[in-house]
Length: 221
Image 1 (cartoon, rainbow, N blue to C red):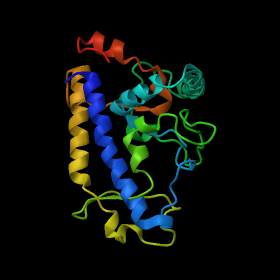
Image 2 (cartoon, rainbow, N blue to C red):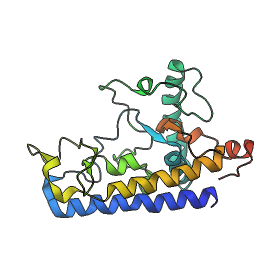
Image 3 (cartoon, rainbow, N blue to C red):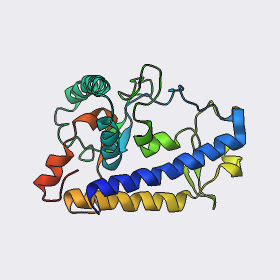
């Protein structure tokens, strides 16, 4: 499967997370406040997979030129700040050569995502990462296995959200499939399906996947 085909398959897979979240919202109404224009979670410098980054680049390419330029300007300012902290943070902008505790940013960090529009909506919503699609509700499998216990504090206020069985989903199988697609992606880029490669959203506009794939003889996006 080519890299573009893998990215398209990944996007289709992530749409399953959207359907789960939409079903939860339809069932619980006002107990879930997530809605277009709420960008409370679109802050801080959280990490995403390199496959998420490739998907976001596809969304970026589809924006009007002026919007692309604005994203690059905002992301560039954040990236410059990061490189003062990590001078070696350069192509392909992966974090995994550092201990994971070094990735963390202060809890009070309120850096807006560079893909956030003035109306507080995501400019690449259909291409956003997995974590953005799942944030807000806990991720609990039908069997009871907890993958992510935290949700947005604005949802189900005063309730023990983990005790709501209707929020559960087929997460064990979904995450296994996500992992399978990710391994295919990094194998195409690096020749090893076991490589872990994560980055930060601010680096997304600047990752040169074409050069990365070509340098390893693995094809281009």
